[in-house]
Amino acid sequence: MTAALQLPSLLDEKQDWTVDDLASLPQDLRYELIDGRLILPSPTGVHQDICLELALMLRPDCPPGYRPIVDLSLEVNRRNEPRPDVVVLRKRFATRSPAPIDGVLRPGTNGPYDIVEYTHGVFTTNEPYSVTIDLPALTARWHETWARIRSKR
Image (tube, rainbow, N blue to C red; front, side, top):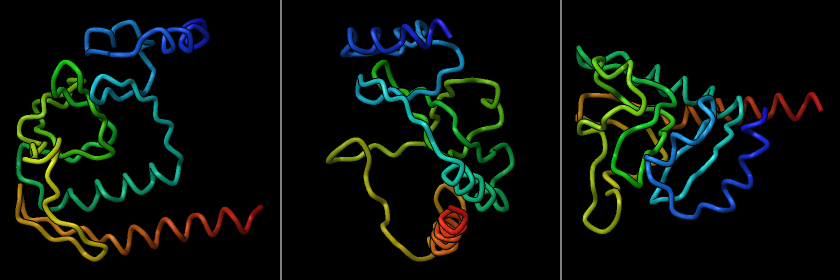
């Protein structure tokens, strides 16, 4: 509790974070480091439910030696330690946090990442392995959950 009470003043004082600075944070604090900015996300249960469904969609054709993982920090560089909602990771890195990216991210020519494909429909790809993600099903699940929550108010 003491660390949480001291956290706002620490955040006010520090403007440009590096991975070395993360050691000063409480161990159980959920964070991301993006371009030297410390981000403290707080996902909802609905968000986490969708992440779990996505991870389950990624699992069936996942190559041997890999696993879809939810909510894991990735080691990118000194000013970036993102925490994607879902990532496919080599099993050998399953005990590491942050985990090395090992080809997970695709650097872009015009920014941090390239958009490989954009769709609101069913997404199918063969890279890095054959997978189909039913985005309309995830969207329907999100709407269904929120509709149930609203109806109980």
